[in-house]
Image (cartoon, rainbow, N blue to C red; front, side, top):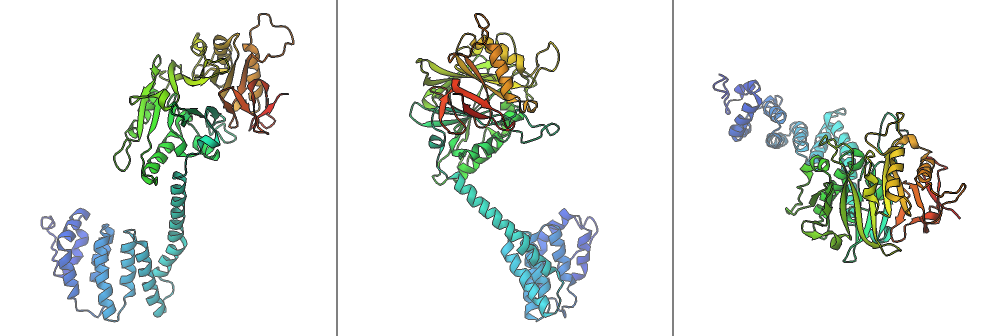
Length: 512
């Protein structure tokens, strides 16, 4: 090619090496690949007093600039040996050999070269030299940063290899909310926005406590870790739709799953079962085929379609594996990745028996506007999680993407009228700060049947309660008792009152 460019370069003639700079980089790389051995032989035969080091640097600089670092190292290694034998300036080749090694990621060897160059510079009484700065970079930045990375890696490996803690940190058959607000808006957020997330533990038919993350959104994993739990404690993920406040932590969880499978000491492949909507499938499609270092599958995915019942995944019974099945309901809420209302609501049908001997069912509305009859889809649920979203903004109009205040009332009237039960109000917009308790009470009051209601009647223990969710809310599913914030004792949900003295954190108190 260089012949076609009419550029004369002879690997045996140093005088022609100036023409190398005139070649395109790709052509020059080809020339070096073909002639570097001859160039080294030519340099070995150079007769010089070493005051003129241009032939060495002429080649060395070009090699470094062309990212041919190993080849540059060979040039400067030869130069170093030659200069050292001649008792000449070996500091310069040591420095540039160090650069070549540094750019290959061989930091310790590079550091030793910089020290050799520095010692020579001190001998020659040169104090403000590149070698001095290079040593400072290594000692003050490169090595300390690498040490931080090493320590973090050790912490990660230790964390990944921690045993499962879910059974004694939370226990079986517990529902925990892992969020506060329903979204993070930089324009309106005044505090930490934590949106999307529940953690459900169930005892499988085999007696194992299984951990299921539901809609893990903003800060889910940080809050989850603060509970003393880790990736080993998550067995499945259920996702109602593809919006960030319901999925933001999914990628982080999957990243930790990959690291767990690469580094766990037992060399076992952990497989996550993921259940999600059409939008979720599209959003995470590229991650769902993930495998570990040995080619083992890491993720099973099950598509959630309204009207379907989910009883198995990859041919394995959900009752046997987790202690639940699912009934998929529609949710009237647009997904980004489908541009359709392909979001879903879910009824989790557990194998737990309530105090009446009935199968305990948990309704999760997901994000949805209210549509007449929606509540009837949850009429057999003893627990319903409602995502309120926001307040109605226009007179006489319901919200188009969320339940809102009136949607929650209408849904619960359809689902729970004249029936006892527990409704958990979740996914508040931050405009509800300081008002979550009263909003829940308004919904609770208006949901109660008016027929036969006496003025001043107190709520009986068999009536529906509406309780606002916060990161402290923990429900024991066998008897629907709620953990009291100060004593950590579980009390019947009918005896819980809400303390919102601090608008940032709800406390659940005994209503004696």
